[in-house]
Image (cartoon, rainbow, N blue to C red; front, side, top):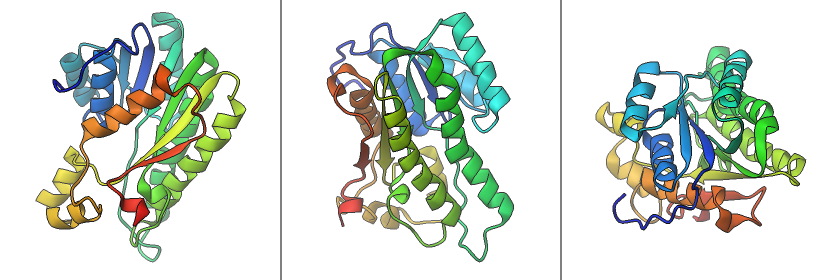
Length: 249
């Protein structure tokens, strides 16, 4: 992070970032904190969440994005603690690699509930307490734009996030900007685990992108900062790939 010049683009803004307490979500929270935002990190894993918040010196609140009562608890806490909200980043997600013949209803329900319903609930419950001029950023995937064999539920869920983003952007067009990032293969702890456990080779995951490498969480965080900051004031309903050329191929 030291290679970036910090300019205080988010000074005084209150931002909620959901998702695993590491990887893309962590890097976005870190970048936003360094740009002056009052960040609240949220995930289901309380132990990892507390560790991340301590490293970032920011607030944290445990939430299950697929549970409306849990999301409402977050909303009430935000009102009591911060009064309102300026930025929401929906980075919580889950993936199970199953084709249509192997996927179970439980696989389907789990991935739809976390990836799609979770994004809906966070927007639905928190948009009413967001300040005018605020920003929502949903994290989808290149698999929300194109399909892959053996990931039927994940592709459906992430595709839903893409069109949900456009619908919410139109609903909130006079109040809040709403955009979506679709990363390719990013070198996160989850991806490193796939390599270490033999689920995929590093060479394969790098070469999915025409640039011949995986992205970094910090690169995704830089684009997230742009979309949630003041420099993208005329950008809403946009679906932006950050994928080393993957969707261009």
